[in-house]
Image 1 (tube, one colour):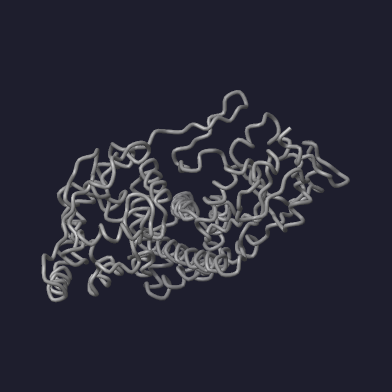
Image 2 (spheres, helix red, strand yellow):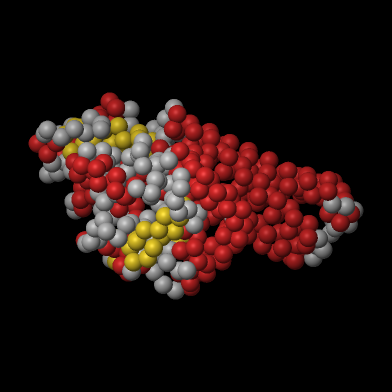
Length: 502
C-alpha cells in the first residue's frame, strides 16, 4: 500500500475520525507565526480607522462632522473613536480578512478588506436610516475611504516586512514535507520555492514508491521512504504535510490521513496535478459527496479581452507622447556611441504565427549578426533553448549595456503595441528564424507577445528555456486583466532592480 508511512504511531488518544469534545479538542498548530502577525494587523486596522476619524474631526467643521448627533459631542466621540473602529474590526473579521490562508500572499486579503469597506458603508447607511439620523454623507464617504486607504497601506507594509523576514531569516514560514513520487514532489518543490515570499519551505521528501525511484538522483532536500511520517515531522521540525499529485488519488487514504492528523498541530495541504492552472479557473463541483475539480477554458475573448486591447492602444499612444524626450535622448546617445541605425528591427513571431518586425533601440555593433556565428561556434551561449545570451556579450557597446540594464531599449516596442502587433503584457516575442514553434511552445502564439510578461518579472535572462516557456504558457492559460495590471506593477520593481537584464 503506497501510504504505509501514514500508519502513525499515534498518541494515546487517536481520533480515527471520531471528533473529540469541542472543549478538549486541541486546536494548537505547530506553525504559529500567524498569531502575532494577526494581532499586529488587528492593531494596525484599529489605528487606521481611528486615524481616519481623527483626521475628519480635525479637518472638517465639527458641526458638520457631528451632524445627526444633536450636539451630543460625547456620544459622537464615542461613536467616532471607539464604535466605528471596533465595527471595522468586526466586519473585517467577518469577511475573513484575518484568515491565515490569505495572509502574506496573493490579492485575496486585499479583496476581503475592500468587501469589508463596502459592508461598513452599507452598515452605517442602514443604521442611519433605521435610527433616522441625518449623517453628513460627505463625511461618511471621507472617513470610510480614508480608513480603507490607511488599512490597505498598513497591510501592504506589514506584508512586505513579512516577506523580508521570510527571505532573510525564514521566520513566518511553513516547513513542509512533500509526500508522493519523486517527479511529483520535485515539481511541487520547484513551484513553492520559486517565490520565497510565499513562506513555504520544503525540508524533506517522503517517497510513496520507495527509495529505488530516487537512486542516483540528486535532490535538493533529504529523501525518506517507509518512515512513520509523524515521527519524521518531529525529526525535521516540519509543521505541514503536502500530498503531491497522484499520492492524493488513493481511495480513502487522504481522508484517513486527515483524520490521523487531527490534534497533532500539523497542517495538511494537497497539491493536485494542476500546478500550472490558476485558482480562478478551478472550481470544486461536488457530486454525491465526490468533490470534482472543474477546470474552465482560458478566456481569450469577451469584454475583458476587448478592454485589454483598448488599454494597450491608449497606453501606447500616451506612452510614446510622454516619453518622446527620453526617446530622442536615447537615439542621440546611440548615434554618438556607434555609427549606424538607431533602431534594430528583427522579424518576430506574433499572434497566431504571424510575423512582424519588432522595434528596439540598437544596443549592438552593426556587425553583431556576423559575430554571432563565431560566438556560437565557440559555444559561448549562456542560455539553453532558442535564445543566444551572454552576460558579457562583446557585440554590445557601452551605451547599449546601459540601455539593456535599464530596459530602455524596449521602449520603441510601444510602436508595435500601437499597431496591434504586440501587447503591453504577454509572452516574449521570439525571433522568427529560431524555431518552428511546434508542440507546447506553439500555444504561446494564441495571444500577442508583450513588452513585459511573466518571465520578465520572474527572472528574465536568468531563467532556463524550459522555465521561460512554462511561464509563458501559464500566462496564456490564466490570463486576466487584473493579472496584467499586477505584472505591470511588478515590472516597475524588476526594472529598478535590473535583475536578469543583459
